[in-house]
Amino acid sequence: MRRPPKTIVGLFLGCLTLSSCGFVGTGTGPNNKPDAFLMHGYVTVAIGEGAGASPGTPCTTPAATADIRAGGPVRVADPEGHTLAAGQLGAGVSSVDGGKLRCNFPFEIRAVPGGVERYVIGVGDRPPVSFPARELRENKPAVITVEG
Image 1: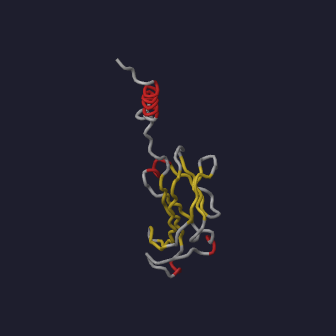
Image 2 (image 1 turned 180 degrees about the vertical axis):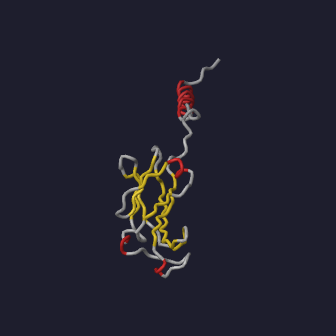
Image 3 (image 1 turned 90 degrees about the horizontal axis):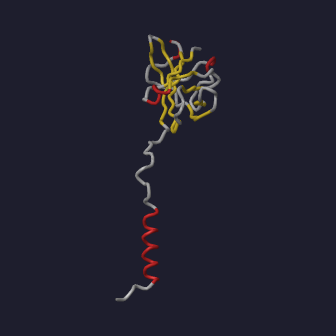
């Protein structure tokens, strides 16, 4: 009976070993979804009846709230104040809320990381406002009210 040459046996064992290396434990790792989410909301500023705007039209804020404007910064931080994400305000659109004319500046911030119980959002030169993380992660808008 003839024995196979050593090189053939070596090649066979080498191929068998190499082919199984990449598949060991592939089904046992964690299957986590990405942790980041899209945060959205708006800043709402009272503009008064004499502003000449009607609901749904472009608007700007009074001089006392000039730091709230289209392109203005929006910062998202953890409760300790570490910045997690940043964005900017969109163009103002007028609305009526509780009988008062207001100018609303929307924002969307992509890839806001998770892992905190609350998010602290700062706009313009205003003090930051804290929101429960769960509500924002469940697509509830972050609404920041600024009174002139």
